Image: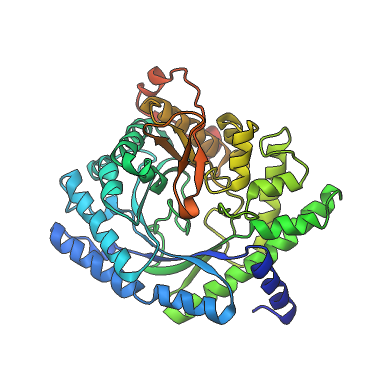
Length: 454
């Protein structure tokens, strides 16, 4: 538990530095709902989720009131639906019906998002996997709170390039079907390499098949807290800088640990992990890019940015693992463009490009996140961007992801408004040279040599 000194420090971080618990995510296994009858399956899914999550939002609000800790989101993650719906779904529309069921029960229990409209296809696709992937555009268009993710590669299996090609087409079709909302459906869709089974953050959350029947995972945040701490050691050497980040990450993670334990006890659900990622918001003072600038960069994207981000990510992990026995998920620093005012400023100033962001993903927690690109970008180009990012994850044995939004009807320099935590973003230029012949090859990029560890 927090001691009296930590309580005082925590209160200050909450009141002055935008500290919050970004999400309590309840993971729910739907494996026992599997049925060959679609109507029966949907009824089982609705019943299982409702009974497990009916008290989640109220419990989160109670904890927030009692401890004075803002808990921004309450979410649900379920077993990848490609696995759950395989026996019942014969068409893409059948999978869309499950998506509607997920959306309805999410609204009924009051959560912000429900994740798990997902497929795991790092080595190959079953018929059900392919049906689900092809249904994603329609599912994202007709639902409000459902999030989708697809794992396309891993260090142990390589990269499924057939699925990469399909996902480029799927993302573009999702953009077209949600163009009236500035292609917002793509903000609820992410592709991964080395996706973790216990990620509480959307859009990539799903309940892995190795997890218990139900589990509580918590995602903390706190870039504003780190930024304020670094202001006090401005000009000091790297040893002081690292120690400051590490100590601050420890304090932030302790808050997450407290909330996770309380939620676990009150909901009578086992505690899973704390994800100690620094997750920014569009709010002023809640930016990872601003931390990098406080380290001494004029803008995120300036020379030295990748080194600064590597330092930040490593020290956040070192501090956080001392505060909780069960750290998991992604854990580090997110660098979404639309959700981070400092990143938006850097793009607008011309300091930050797509290529520099890709370099930064070699050392951050995730990957190319919430990046708006021109709506006339080719599907093969999107697939090429995905393949590059997955290769970084595969070779470096880390999680990488792409959440990219081709905004139909908009072009470079225009601004797109997503609203809420999703923020707004300038449309970024994309390399226009073709990679179509590369993507059309099909098959699988094999696992790297260092994957053979048995």
